[in-house]
Image 1 (cartoon, rainbow, N blue to C red):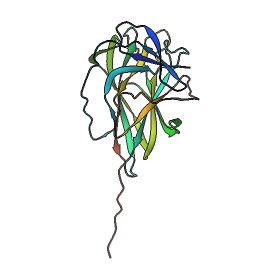
Image 2 (image 1 turned 180 degrees about the horizontal axis):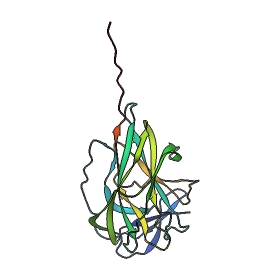
Image 3 (image 1 turned 120 degrees about the vertical axis):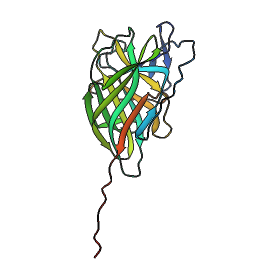
Length: 233
């Protein structure tokens, strides 16, 4: 199976471009124009901050007409490093759109936090299905469709220090526009280069893409530290 991606386009003409290694990706021809440059501010409670860059888009949709087998799922990797305290995560902001006709399909987003296992997702530690808290049009046009900024609030997921993947997908249903997750600039502190993709759900096999990172902010707070009290006699 091949990963299916979008790239900035003037005309939606499909082409094949190899990523290197065993897996190839299907891409749309690039558009001959400079990418949109934006500044996204990340606060102190952000544990992964990767601004959207408009370079590409990966379908992450269980009802994906443009994905061959009808399914493609994307997962982004990151690291939690707090000196042993851990983090309570509770919010994701991501960027993407509905391709090819720019028609949004209201649907829940499923969020799965997974342990890293040799560079691919290796076991679910938290899972939620949520309705977006907000879905805002940014005014940017990508691949001929509108860019959406989607905020997802979810029940707290507590992660100790370590390497993880966050898998995010929706299900627009076959016959409708497909949701794509826009690429982003690697977070040099909390990010890990590359991402993973799969073509079945529930997923039994993951493929690693060393060249692609996704746009995302992952928000949460440090796990509170319980202080003990002592009596002096």
